[in-house]
Length: 127
Image 1 (tube, rainbow, N blue to C red):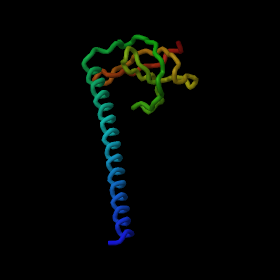
Image 2 (image 1 turned 60 degrees about the vertical axis):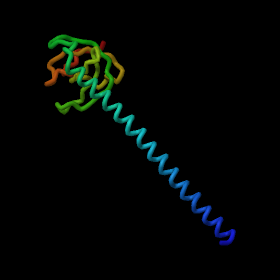
Image 3 (image 1 turned 90 degrees about the horizontal axis):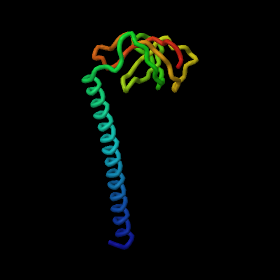
Image 4 (image 1 turned 30 degrees about the vertical axis):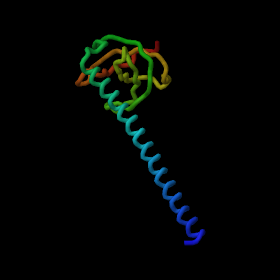
């Protein structure tokens, strides 16, 4: 085998090693992403289970102040403000369009979901 042939074999080995290293880096990145996602799911599941075990910090018919964290389409089909009272999720309906994320509102609790992990409420006013 001449020098050109040896260089060609060496170049092919270098290319093969580069492909293998690239594949290993990609595999490692996928494993890291999967573990992060799994950790987030475990944390969310734990929070959900904890919420099911405790009594709601709100009572039916009472009015509470909370910050609007986001707006969502609730099962009612209406746009609702989402916020939390002591970590407990409250969905407030009939919120005027002038209310934005970050605004503090008052809402009266009307009902709980089946597991009492969230409540539906009606907008009373801005705080």
